[in-house]
Length: 101
Image 1 (tube, rainbow, N blue to C red):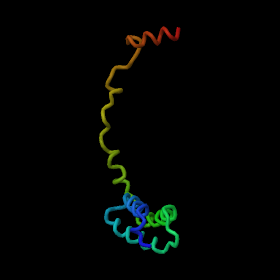
Image 2: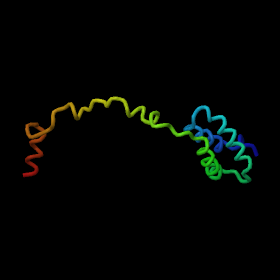
Image 3: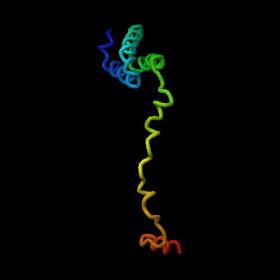
Image 4: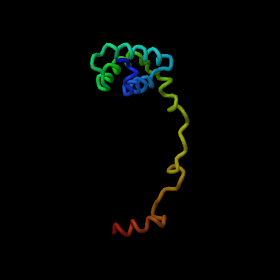
């Protein structure tokens, strides 16, 4: 039975190809279809177990520079850092002080 007859397996292949580099998508899809063609009783669970191992072979982890690209940006301003601290001179603090006495 062709892979195209299993919509769940097609969606699984697309989902597992997502984190791969764009250049590896088509190669992964061909390898996945070939690997699943040799599975006698095809279902979503069996397909996942077969394809998870195959995906690791095609995955190219990002180097440290690519992985930290968004961490290197300047930190955003925080309202908590800008505002004055809440203390006894704040009208909201009066009820807290009376409640603890």
